[in-house]
Structures are given as structure tokens and as C-alpha cells.
Image (cartoon, rainbow, N blue to C red):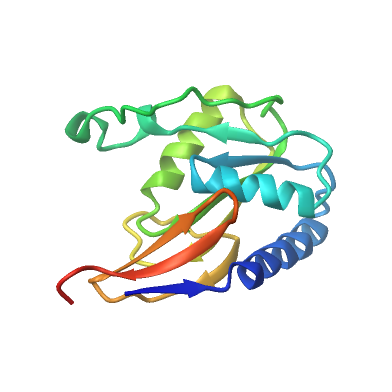
Length: 170
């Protein structure tokens, strides 16, 4: 069984939350970075909604994962692409789903290898909780608590949609 969550409402909430937070922090020229692949789809959408003039960046964190030696290399690894300097920039880091915090830790390690940002704002479409690291998003489209047999997946890029799935046998 698959249930669809309202992607338009989640994107509206994420956009509004980012606008409010950027305004409160006095950030008027952020650089946006999406984590592949879902975060890149969201960065494309949100950079247009926020009217950002600069192209967004794309991170492939495969080499920065803390389980890299155990799981090996994803055969679809592509190089990261940041079309701007990160040094002293206010960065908006976008991911589709946050759970343990390990993907975000890996992404921040990679960003800092490019340069030291002035700030990093974390925005995620869905927060599933279950942290293993003390990393919290600044802006979230929706917080969900899933049963052990449920999964959430962003599909796209056109049309962008988010699915809540029940694993077989449940």
C-alpha cells in the first residue's frame, strides 16, 4: 500500500519557514546546496520559489559517508558541483528526509572541505526523528513518526511527489 503526502503543502511550508528564518537572521544572499538526489530536486524547486539569483549546488556525499568502508561505493556516484565559493557564505543545505543525521554530517564535512561557510541552515522536507547524531533541521516541511514497516520516499523530479509506503508482509 502506498499513500501520497501533499507535496505542494510540504513545499509551501518549507518555503514559508525558510523565508521567515532567513529574514529573522538577516540573510539576503544565501547559496543553496541540495544533497543528491532528492535534495537536489528540492533545491531546484526552492531556489526558484525563493527567487535566488545564483544556481544551486549539488552534493554527492558517497565518499563522506561513515559507512563507506562497509557498504562500498554506489555505482552511480557523480562528482559534487558547487558553482560558488562556500567561504564566508550563508548556506542553505537541503535534503528530502532526515532520520539519523548521518547524511547531514557527511554533507557538512564535504561543504567544509570547499571552505568555511558563515552559516549553514538545514532544511528538510520530512523529519523522521530517530537521531543518532545531535543534528536538527532549522526548517521542516513535516515531522512524521513511522512504524518500523513504513518508509517515506521522494519521487521525481517531474512531477515531484512524496510517498509513504508499507513494506510487504505488513
